[in-house]
Image (cartoon, rainbow, N blue to C red):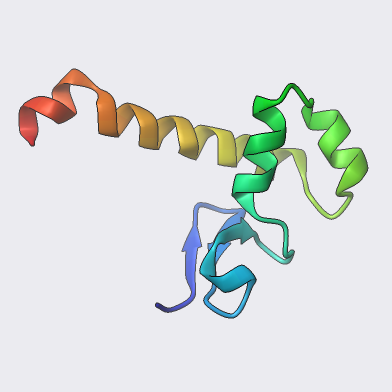
Length: 81
């Protein structure tokens, strides 16, 4: 596995957090932030806890997660597979 940028704010680097997707320039795993959002935390609360994150980065993580879900489970994706 090699360093890979995902979008503008996310990165996969085998030397950071065992290659989990993280927010660029941090050691904050994307999955952790998405989990907190799913538990009802707001973006503002997460930014208060992790000031090294940016709102745009969290929003990008949400969009990419949504895109992955839609592309995997949309009827069009199933028809192609």
